[in-house]
Image 1: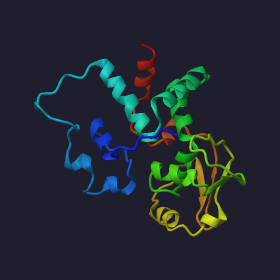
Image 2 (image 1 turned 45 degrees about the horizontal axis):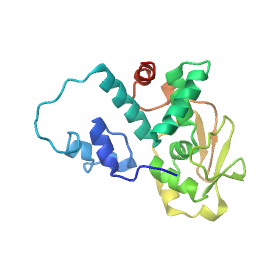
Image 3 (image 1 turned 120 degrees about the horizontal axis):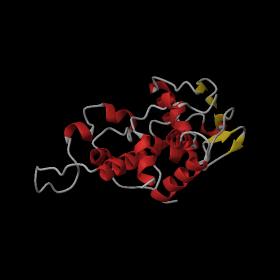
Length: 207
């Protein structure tokens, strides 16, 4: 499975915003966006080019891709599926990305970041409705129950992440004692805490 293995902070600096790719570290003084608030690479001149409409749309797409950790081909397939749906394309796109298994594990608080959640899923630490699932892109549905497997119940990483989780999305419920969570419903746009303008992505693919 192809994934990005480069520096995560480099992605945040390229987009100029905190994408929270390293979890709680992004909220500390060690955050690279705060320490070096300029794009990565050689800076031959301080003069910046004016942002074109296309560049603005492209950067918004890249921002969403990097937040959820999907590659270009995967993202294109998500957009095609969203555009065929009967709802608002941009909102449906974000809903599909939010319902990815690795993202739900992260939202439930079982992992400090999406990349960490991806690793935990790949290493067979969770079940969905009692069945082992190790595919990060697996799309969960409303009513699905995600459970930490018995053999993984003592993982310090999971317990530490749950302890540090401050807020839970209103479309999810979690039982920290039983190490389980449930998807109550498909999230509405207001319940998806990502600072992006998905309509710009729709406009980009409509060019």
